Amino acid sequence: MTLQQILYFQRVARSGSFTKAARACFVSQTAISRQISALEEELHVTLLERDTAHVKLTLAGEYFFQQVNELTARLEEVVTRTQTIAQEQQTHLTLGIPTILEQHAITQLLRQYHSLHPEVQLSTVAGSRQQLVSQLVDRKIDLLVAMDFDLPDLEGLDSIILQQVHTTWLLPTGHPLAGAEKIAPQQLQGETLILTQEDPRGNTEELLRQYYNQLGLKGNPVLHTRTLEELFLLASAGVGIGLLPSSVPKYLRPDLCSVPIDGPQWNFSFLLISRRERSRASVRAMFELAEHL
Image: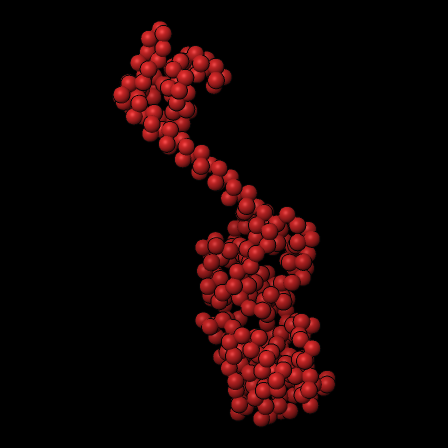
């Protein structure tokens, strides 16, 4: 049984005539008659009563006609929806961005991409890095921007470096060391350190603690925050100092400043991550643009 046979049958049943059906389908009457006969043979059922004057549905034919009408109507809906989805996919791009830090890292890329592809609708999704990697694998998002530490397994995914950065001190502008060219860790003995982990499933806070220990600040008081907004608020109030990637200071509020670290650096990268197969043009264009930044 083929879809073509069903469509021919529907046309004959509606018109009550092989001649009219053939004319509407731009085929010969013989071709339609042959296809419907083959359909009946396969079903082992007579669907149409034929005579020289007209064509009439049998009881089985009436049931078959009703059912295939529902099936072909549903098929048309499926085809239409499939085409709509395909069109939306070509003109829509969803990025997973775990934290404010990743938002800063991708600003330039998004600006250039939008200028080159204004027809593509860009949207973002928030979540933990682990959650967003799972959504990327499950095709719920198209791309992910993330720091290259504290990530789950990226097997089956591709990544490209967007930015390579290092850490700087975050201080209020009223701090005595705010105007220094560099600040050595020993100058911050006794200062309260702010540990921030925006991703509750991650290990960023522990990595920060290890880095502070490496700088010789193991005995300093510690405050814990869950968002960068909290870090900025506490730092601007003079409650403590924190760390930021070197790419972020230009986005800081006016009552905060960054000062380079005179000591061991924590170097890391921001990554753009995609599924290995980039079948959609909008995704390929973003990834290729990132490769040439």
